[in-house]
Picture 1 (tube, rainbow, N blue to C red):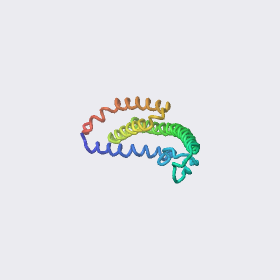
Picture 2: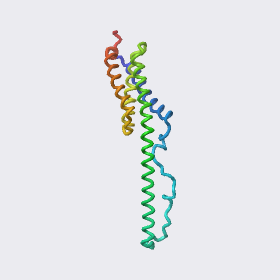
Picture 3: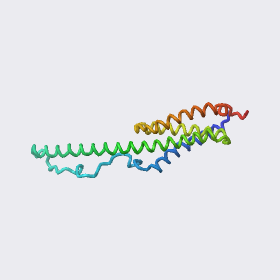
Picture 4: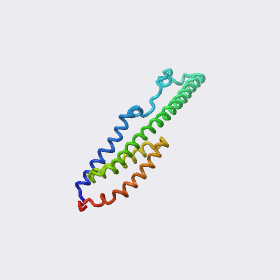
Length: 176
């Protein structure tokens, strides 16, 4: 095996995979970074409650009013968080479709451009497969039907790629 070609493949894969995910976050910036989790609506629910210096002096009606207010706040927070998570999953479904389509395009590029070096072709192939796998694991909860269809197409393109290019990847000693 030619270790130089293997090193080139590794370099391509190690740069390709983060490039795809960074690109997805650049083109789909919503729900990334600090915006990837629900922060709350900023209502007065979680302000400091007007407890007296000695909480033991609260009457039963005062305690019940505070408990009721806390329950209402928690219910409101839970409803808002559900809406946020639902919108986030829909958005991330679009991001997954983008990543899967991009990787499929790169896989097809590696398959149908005949003049590329074997190490470049293999790097693009492995990079697109690794990035598709990573995206599928990362965005599994989106349950994207379009993403699933693209994944099936990618799977068959990968099988075709391996069947068509298997001889060029096995013979890396330069004896062709």
